[in-house]
Image 1 (cartoon, rainbow, N blue to C red):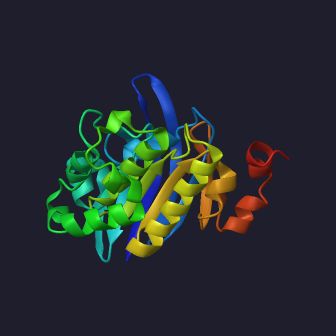
Image 2 (image 1 turned 45 degrees about the horizontal axis):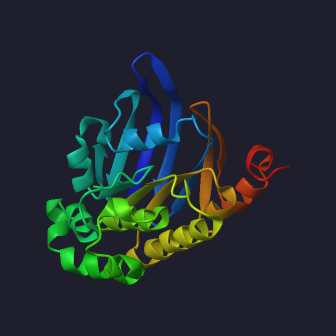
Length: 242
């Protein structure tokens, strides 16, 4: 049984304090939504989990059966090797490499190399346009195609836990729906555990099991199930136009 626990963490950038006492957990096979408008710390939290931004207080613990690993003591490379992958905000592709080359780089970690062809087949089946454009340079693709590539590149690392940061940014409503549907499909087919940071509650709620609302770097609300999120005054006020 895999579980990721964020325990009362503080984090920021230099003198700028972004996260304060943030706690949440993601249990195996869940899709957990992390809701919050721009500037409230969603991306910072994702970066803390991946070891890209240092935590100044608290811990981030990966529990795998009886083993407990504090990720704040690990490098990003070690965290990826534990089976955690990030689809970053803005995609962060290798723009002058082809689709195929970007996907192969996703399988860099040792644990994914033996699964490379199988994962490649899965990605091309999930996103047929990537197979069609396998020789195209990443920068020349549309925003929707780049988002597909960013998700597929993360899948190439054979993750157990997938972090997805703002997948709807810059996409049309139709592409947002398609992207959410595909994240939900990959989660089911690959047995993934997903933490997704988003502002688009309408689309996120279609695939999320439960969620948290992050306001000014603190957890302002925890919905233990989707219904609690839907009926939260905070969510109604900020995300449902009530």
